[in-house]
Structures are given as structure tokens and as C-alpha cells.
Length: 383
Ligand code: COS
Image (cartoon, rainbow, N blue to C red; front, side, top):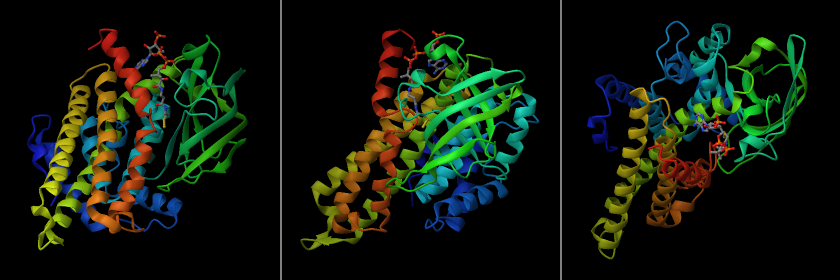
């Protein structure tokens, strides 16, 4: 039984506790799904999560203007990640993909959210490029104004849901100024003429991932999200919300690794007694539990701060993501060690956690970038 004591922390309201309990029961019944065909599995997960109402927190309700509830996003990611990494992925990408629309979209653009929240459309966030990952402001992709349209040309890569998305939020250079101030955001339908999958990308924890080519993709001027030149700030604002949730997913993976290790230590006999009686094993379990709780405190502190109305949680979100993902890697590595050969055996839960966690220290701002963000915030006095 996973530790649920964190739900009594003051960061939460009763609606969060009820959400966690109901989702836990849903996960026990529905997860994990078969991962052999990741495209089909993701489509199935989005449809299932949407039909049962779990995707509603990923985007604002176009009918009211209640902001995204980051605590609900985090609890959901933590819970799904504990049961099935791909379910967490399917949920998270619906949110990241539509984040710019939730935060800055027009009523017409927000109409898409009815579909994504119901699991009837899949979304994707297209920021990174072959030559520009951590250094977002150096992107090359261009959007040229042509009458009532913009014409997008260039490439995006590492795009989650690339190939199966119905809508992409795409960032491109519109040239109002050099660097960060000359980028804008666009809503591009997946079936737009000139948009092609240049390459499917295989990674250690498989999920739909692609490099996309935009060859003179024409969208109406009304497809721009926010104002010309605001794209960089829009991307950063979306990441401010969703970076804490990456930490929450890492937390879910780490909690699962800890639970599996506790079970293993109790069941496995070593030198004539349960492994749990060895102090070296107790030391590992204590370190793992400490890292899990510390990560949870940082994740839910960031989520609570945003939900309380903070305009920016750049520092809190960066700390939560950095700490929770790096520590989850260590927790899972200890779990592998405690499981011996089983820990690296294909198909074992601990082996899959070991593969799942690694990308979280890279995507949505690598650990090294989070350190830059934190240092700038601290040294700039923005605490
Ligand atoms: N919210 C709102 N505005 C923000 C912001 C945020 N979180 N972060 C920065 N800005 C604003 C700054 O205030 C600045 O505004 P002004 O031009 O008005 O002064 C502008 O954006 C440029 O900011 P900055 O100078 O810090 O930009 P840098 O080019 O130095 O980039 C980093 C900073 C490295 C932090 C940024 O490029 C980044 O986060 N990189 C990682 C990207 C990432 O996560 N990629 C993964 C893609 S999704 S898988």
C-alpha cells in the first residue's frame, strides 16, 4: 500500500483527497495497459481517461474561466505514474500540448479544449528543434506573414505525440526582435498541408515521439496564440505550470520503487533472516523514503504556490522538477540494487521504472537548465 499520508498536508483541500482516492481506484481497475503498440496504447489511454473524466484538469473549461489547478495535475500525474508510465505520459501531454491555449487562447482557440478534455483530440507542444533545445531563444523555425495568414517553415524535434496529435502548439520566429522577443506561438492542426513526420524517434521508454517537418504550412492569422513576439514568454509560462508536474511524475515513479523495495525486503530471505533486518538495507530504505518526502514537499509547495495565485513560480517549479527527478533516479537505482538480478530483468516493474525515469531529467528543461533558472532567480533577488 503506497504511503498516502502526504494527502493530509495543508497544501491540499478535501476535493484533492477525494480526487486521489477515486483515481487510485480507477488505476487499480484500468492500468497498466498493453504497451506493445505505443501509438495505439496512447490513443486508448487518452480515450479512456477522457471518457471517465480524468482529462478535465489538463485544460481550462472553456465555459468558465477557472485557472488550471496545479495540485490536481500533480496528484494525477503522481498517481498515474505509480501505476503506468504511459498513462502518465498520455495525461501529461494533453496538458502541456494545450497549456498555451488554456493560458492565452482566444475563445475560438479554446473550443479545442472541449475535445482534448474529453479525450476526443490529442495535443502536442512543439518547441524544441534539431539545433535548439535548452537554448529556446535561438530557434530557427520561421513564420512569415502573408496577407491574412502565416506560413511556417522549419523543423521541430523530440515532439511527444508527434505523429498522433490532432493539434500542435508550435513556436516560430516572427522576427519582431532578435532572440527571445521575436518568437510567436501558433495553433496548427495535425492534418495541415505541408506538415509531415520526418522521423519517428525510438527511446528507452517508448512513447510516440517524432521529428516534424513544416514545409510552407499555412495557418490563418487567427491561429496565433497571444500577441506577436510573445511566444517565448508563453512557452516559459506553460513550463512554469507543467514543470512541477514533471516532478510529480518522478515522485510517482520513486514511490513505486520504494514500495516494491519494501515488499522485496520483507519477502526475501538473506543470511537466514528477512533482508529487511540488514542495517545496510534499512539505510537504503531510509534514504529512499527521505528523498521521496523531500521531493513531495517541493512539488506540492510549487503547485500550492501557483494555485494560490502567484503570477510566476519559476523558482519553485524549477526546484521541484530538478530535485524530484534527480532524486527519483537515485531512489530507483537503489531499488534496482535491492532487487538484484530481477532489477535489470526485462519486464520487471523496477527495470521499467529505471528506463522511465531517465528522460524526465532531460525534457521540459534539463536538470542543468533548472540550475541556471534557480541561480538566476536567487541572484536576481526574485524569491
Ligand atoms: N515566465 C514568464 N516570462 C519569462 C519566464 C517565465 N518563466 N522566464 C523568462 N521569461 C521572460 C524574461 O523575463 C525575459 O523577458 P524580457 O525580455 O521582457 O526581459 C524573456 O522571457 C527572456 O528570458 P531570458 O533572458 O531568461 O531567456 P534565455 O534565452 O536566457 O533563456 C532559459 C532562459 C535557459 C531558462 C530558457 O531558454 C529555458 O527554459 N530553456 C529550457 C527549455 C525547455 O524546457 N525545453 C524543453 C522543451 S519542452 S520538452
